[in-house]
Amino acid sequence: MTAVLAVKQLEAKGYSPETKVSTFYPNLPNAENITIRQLITMNAKYDTSKFVPKRLGDEKCTLTKF
Image (cartoon, rainbow, N blue to C red; front, side):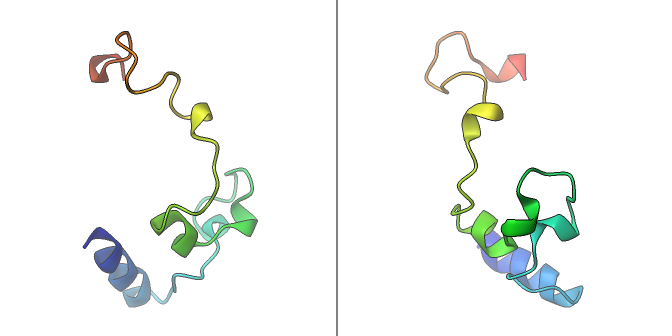
């Protein structure tokens, strides 16, 4: 459902799922090679270890630390 709503909003603003992420985030690494569709379908191949410091199952990593 979230993907459908996101695509509807993109299209309402004149964008498509094939729009490059660099349109919105030009400083994001590799943004010129990634589309909104890839983000929505989780196929952008970003290394999440850069964004999540520890595994979510780690006892020391809790939401209160973020």
